[in-house]
Image 1 (cartoon, rainbow, N blue to C red):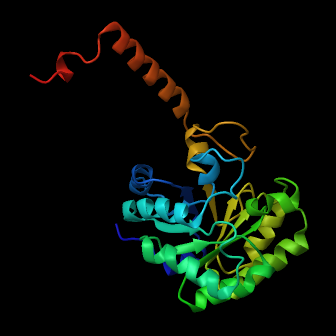
Image 2 (image 1 turned 90 degrees about the vertical axis):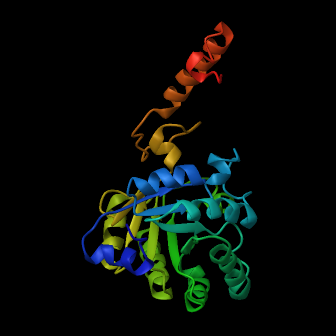
Image 3 (image 1 turned 180 degrees about the vertical axis):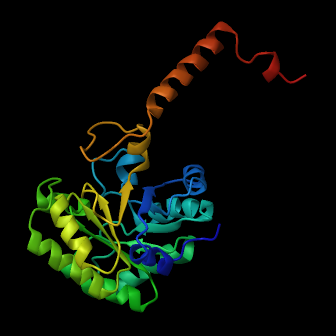
Length: 262
């Protein structure tokens, strides 16, 4: 199965194909998700919370993003691979932003970057695309702006959302994530744009959907947003397996004859 390219990904909207996207942070998980046929893998700055145990996405560094992206990019044989530009690597002017994004593409096998921001980021998006760096936009709730927003709040300004989404498209983005947006607003934006919209907490009318893989597998900790659906309860499976291992070691049942080298 050939690797999905940026133009192929964008063309999925016109073809009426629903797009699937999941986060991945390491080689093993990325390989499993890729083999299962997901269309895109996102190395999200959510790894700050999911992998590192931070309270928000702000602490993760560019070097850390590249470290994880290299593993994911090496695992992917089919899925388009996209990497978040961590705070504040896209907020330092066009030339520095190009340098930061170029490092991601040069040091990994990933194909595109994602950055948060609407109309105010149009200049940066345009500079990156002119430099040959594909960009996925991200509007609505912006986790990197958690302090400015005073928390994780749903975007309810329809006019601003539409303005931001159009500006991101006009600047050259090939797709855009809509996060925590009322379904009717997301539907309107999706109908207006020529590029795919990828929803998370934005209703069913987006061109595709993305979830954090830990949420999908039921191995998250702490608060679980309403828009998340757990398709498995892997946390319970892990708990059961580890307890069985502990008991068998303590009882002398592991290793057994079949695990003992002669």
